[in-house]
Image 1 (cartoon, each protein chain N blue to C red):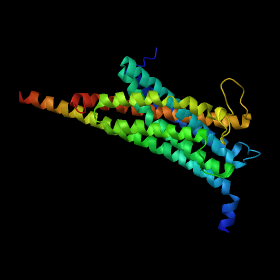
Image 2 (spheres, rainbow over the protein chains, first blue to last red):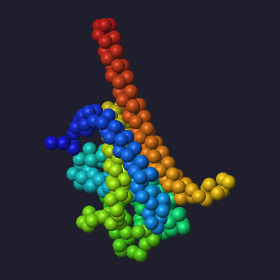
Image 3 (spheres, rainbow over the protein chains, first blue to last red):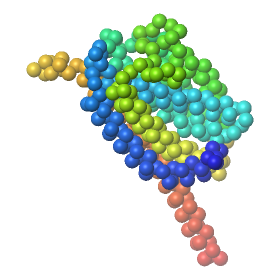
Image 4 (spheres, each protein chain N blue to C red):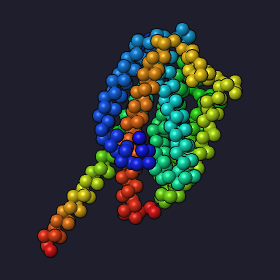
Length: 237
Length: 62
């Protein structure tokens, strides 16, 4: 059984699989790029601008998913005092932050040729911007607060409160009249986009997931080692 | 001439910029994480060596 509370499990997993994760990322990224930039067809309305979707959508999914994991880990860490979960959250936060940034910037670049504007205070865009700032706050709090336990407690609270924003982002396009289009892919119904566009989208998503796992394993190892060092050095505690 | 090319590839300019932003951001994140980890692992190894050399030196002295 994969023991989530034991850092050694992750260390062993990362030592054994990091090379293969890099290979899989590299191959899927190349396949994804070739399909999304050259092989996939143009959209009848958006023409080539639709190609931005292949980086924008996976980045948005991953940034939302990572924040959901951060919220869950923060909850477990705050309520059950299982420290390792706050280390998960701390290691994941910069990854989620970068994906939220990618989602916003590529969305903005997609907006100009399709909507005629880089930005609008639409419910989906605004809630995504709030998620980005929540990530910034989370990362900055860990940097600024020198006392580890205080930083852990405050960031856990931020992680839990930030969860409220996730259903708002997801359902904003249904609840409000927005410029942003509704989801084309949902869990409970068949996707409304053609397979020729769905394939590169899923390949890019898979590729970004592998890269996220790769970066998470590195950051987690770093956090565990620095936590151990600070404990021994008796600094910041 | 340049303006003509720019107009013809207007949408592609946005597409390429999006991909560049994406992969550049991920590249920076990956390398900063990798650098951080290798720096701290290096520190760990040198610490271990220091401890080992110290303990061997002191045992010789004894």
